[in-house]
Length: 404
Image 1 (cartoon, rainbow, N blue to C red):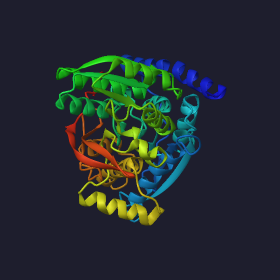
Image 2: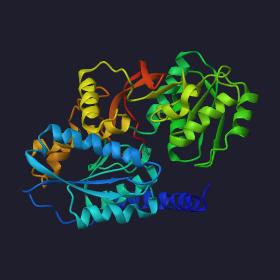
Image 3: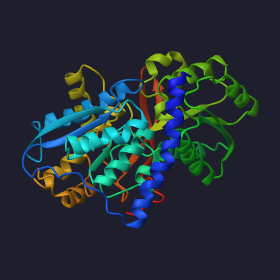
Image 4: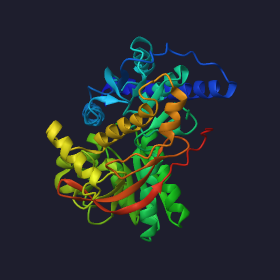
């Protein structure tokens, strides 16, 4: 691991707990948050993108923005009858910079809504600042459970998933298949740990047993010793959470160790989303669970994929879908007030009641403002994560700790 990357990671870990504590303290004591200057009732709807535009997650940030902008373009470039003006900040996937960057959008640019982000550590900082300023926030990816759990708020919405959800869906699948002993393996950070927690909850509720929980520091990709340990435990299956370059290396190392045809490997959908080209033959046949898949039969997905390919000369992925749906969710609020973004209670009420006609399939929001959505069982076939079935219908995150 590069020294700078390690320094940022350690800083992020130190940052997360104080941020959560401060937010909870403010909520519990009824402290009056300092509110940014309200944008004018007339004029344009101001959207602030706080996304990664450089580094490991740059492609994800671009896909989210592409999806959002495409929906707005389909509405004639307007939301609630008003033109849309965009502001952008590169969050650099750096939690230490999150409060300052979010404050720039809210106080300097006076945006009506912040759309961000990908990295869960950065997300914690954005949530804190959005709550302090009572600014509308739509989370288009980061699954950190706390955002719609203990740190939930009337102005905090998500168009993606909680980390708990995909893991829970796969735990349900493996239990239904009659598997009894499973080993889990992940990076030791929030996304991985919360995904494993969801898996374990579903799997053990139906009589299965997680016999060993293995982990390694993020973003370490030296998997050989852990793969050897898994082989010695001889479980019925293995559940993993990895994404990006780490997912590519793990899947290849798994095959190289000769375990691909010996111990069934399953994962959260991010194991094979956006990674199939690099994983090649090693990924073929792998099964994962996610709220989006290739080969969905709904009309919305077909038109979305066609429009996205025409507009950007790329095939869309789950990140583009989440950006598209963030715009749909905002449109529900903006349309209800005819673009008057100063009517925040009415905007929130309309967003809470929205039924989003998503490419993933229509979804509504839970009381904590997290999507209540179908999770699909997908199987890798060529360069696609093809839908096999619905693993769990209308899965709602438990939102433990949320007081909405």
